[in-house]
Image (cartoon, rainbow, N blue to C red; front, side):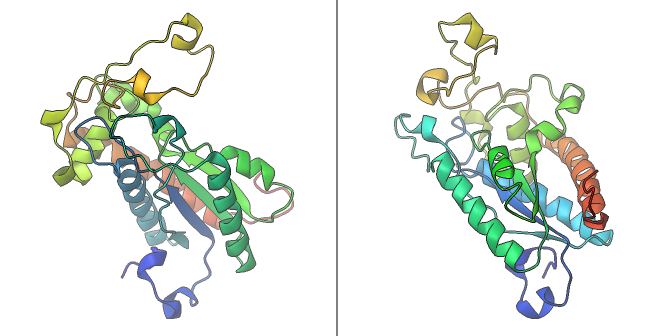
Length: 256
């Protein structure tokens, strides 16, 4: 049994520890081009969370990984022919977080990290909503932003969805579920508006129009080695934060 994974532990072990930080991962269930599994976001974020909590726990930080939430906001995926994305509304996801925060806070936990692995999950609004009503310290980490600065050193052409980055992680950590030979080039379909195409204006993209087969970004240069290089950076950065957070006193000026 791994003591830093809630789902694997029993009450005897859990109640013997004073847990400082909980990590709640968020994934999604959706198509990822033609070559990756529907659970890609969930598998990735759980692997990242597990490795980071393992390293932080080994360093003495009492960090606990909670079960991953496998359903995300996919309201713009529902017109994909045969897509079968499992979507919840943003309000549903935020209500779930509210309930989980309440249950953890009632049991003495004071620090919760929302580790997000799906772009459709916009979790920061709930941290604002609960800021003055909860004693819980809440923060959000979108893992795919955490190492974006090193992407040019690892990847040829990083994209956005089922791209070289995600495919590399898949090949490294769940290769039996990845079929690279089925992938298309992940080309995006531009809108008729330059402001949207250049990122000046943001929309909720209808995925069946924006993509050919749900992929955004060319995955064909992916490799397991690139996935392992990325994971090393992610684990180093996020585990260090978890250690610092676990050791930080929640005084009057926390987190400053």
